[in-house]
View (cartoon, rainbow, N blue to C red):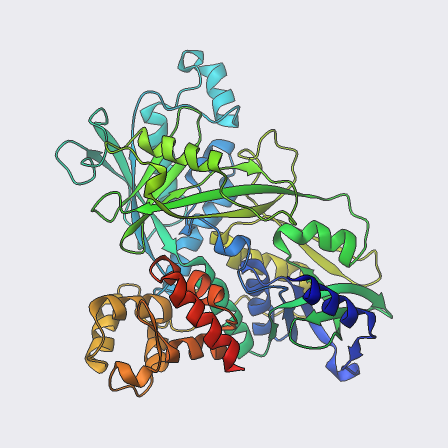
Length: 540
């Protein structure tokens, strides 16, 4: 924001906000935060009959929810911390979510090469217990323990769709070809890919379709209780400040959850959030097959290498404490070196910084449980209701993208008593927009799209199906050829698709479109992105 824009924003806030509501306009629930937890809670609650409004100060999924490792997974390493409930819940959710969004989520196989140097990450409950019973292990992860962990991983969640664990001999196989020859054995198991930013947007779209009001680029400046009703002062980037009213608040501010408690709502709370930065690098494509690797380092930590956007490989993540939400997370040179060295210890062909095409970093807002390290901090979520201000607010700490739907159901258990609403859970398996087709139906749907729109290439149609699913037909409309889709911005992005993203998916800038609604920023040139931004600015 420029100095002039900052002064303009301050001038707006000096003016009395416009109270555009009356008693009938009071909503039941006002959600602060447009990440996956905020949008998931809004969708769940509006589907149970509450009136809901949501405000996000930037773009949807503009922080943590677009900076994940992009996996629906149980959290294999969390078993060593004995977080059995969290792992079981996440494993059950993998398949529940796959059925609801087969366009943006799909199964992936993970190869875990075994070597005798594998060690625990610090003093986990498992390593402590084994240290007493089997002191000769000296902190190592033996093969039998890994296989037992994978057995639990296969069976804790009632797996039906995904394949189970197998053992793999690496010599002479595609899985072994990229690895150093010292790796002879591996375990192969299943988890799932998820387009994280699109998951958030589709939850918001579905919430809006069911009656919720979704505000993007609208900052919640303050929230004060008056006569048992929250008075929420909003400052939209494209309009005057206004006041919304709500019976209950949900603080789903992610990294800003503590800031909202202290400075926006101004209530006293002893609960805190631990900010943990996770960084990733994207490199040129490192191998030809479509499986992921799960690498364990001598420091006990793990990273993934994941085939990404056809021509690239995603590597991550790190775990480091982050100072405050106002400091933008970046993948530091040290973190880049760490990920490069980590992966290069396994791969025949060393990676260099010249191979990196993009980096990103996000801040995970974990519940501060006093853990000794960022890696050991719990990934489970904690939900607390505070009524000290005279009206209820639900504060959301932690969570992982895999369990967002269950978090929303747990949030409802905290919300429902204030509304005498006993509505039953409803979101399990209910398709998100564009996802009402079988889990194994992507290829058939892509064929249908290409038969309808003969001008599409295989790559173009595949991208559209994996972004929009059935809605790809609505995106393309009555087009007979590519020219009917309007201006081409590069990398198969057209004016008609951009219009859809603005009108249906809350996009406002080129960054929203090429890095969150898609990853076309990996393929578009800076002049093409600039042309898109100019087109959006002139669109009005």
